[in-house]
Image (cartoon, rainbow, N blue to C red; front, side):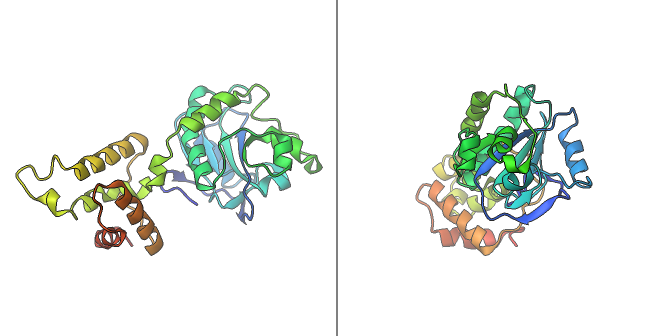
Length: 265
């Protein structure tokens, strides 16, 4: 999965589709380079080291499809993980850096049905699902002869997990990356919104859509063009939108209306 609301810089170390996903792995880059610099380097570094995401205090950059193998923590770890590189030094990653990436970690955990919990090396070795550090992968698979201990012994796991737990995944649940550009289209399908001198200003449906749009604007930077949806994605979005609205039309009606609008593929 590639998230269209994030900048994408394809890493050279792309191992292709991954068959198993047990853990989210948190790394520290252990240098002072920015997320953009790290992602740029990953595009052409000779050893093919890679991660799915790079972030600093200001940006989160995606570098690989989350369904593909990243080359960030040797063989066994790479086969089971989605990997995040937080820019900074082990044990000294800033609070802003952790807060910046927490919503994306929450989204990944939601999309891959992974529980938001810290797990240790033995858990990883036993196939328990959750979130761990590179150090836990090193300890779980000594046969790989890894030596990395990031994000460090004093990384504030309880604080970071609380940020991930607190990050809203509700926007992800309603396909925010598509819905932002379709609020207007959905609104216009309701006759009651177009009738009356106030043009539906007091309609519950309008207020619901305005609230969704405001939440999206607060959490994402709107794109200038909506990405195309497949038929399956369009139907799934229609069902989710219909469930949000008072006295909703059928999902098929919403899908039909959305399909008439520009940018729907």
